[in-house]
Length: 91
Image 1 (cartoon, rainbow, N blue to C red):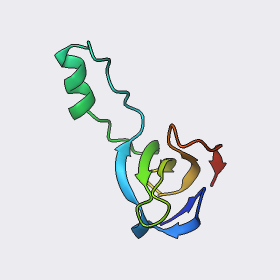
Image 2: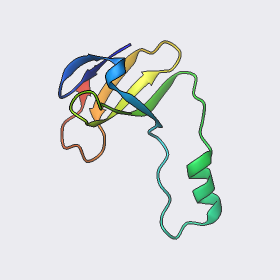
Image 3: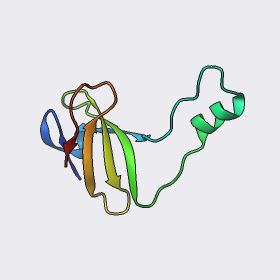
């Protein structure tokens, strides 16, 4: 699998580290214990399109949000993760 970094161009998978599902949102500071438990431990095992966080440690050291089909590994979109300050880039 190759990933097209919006800052460095096309790179091998070995330059990246997979973090996980980009969908879960951190609960508010005053959220109950159940909300925190769900956020930390419960994840969907998606078979199909999924938004994921990846870290480009072997390159520009940017966090990316990648939309990928978990069955075929086809990447349909790549964008800097929130706060990276760049526009969405299509893969």
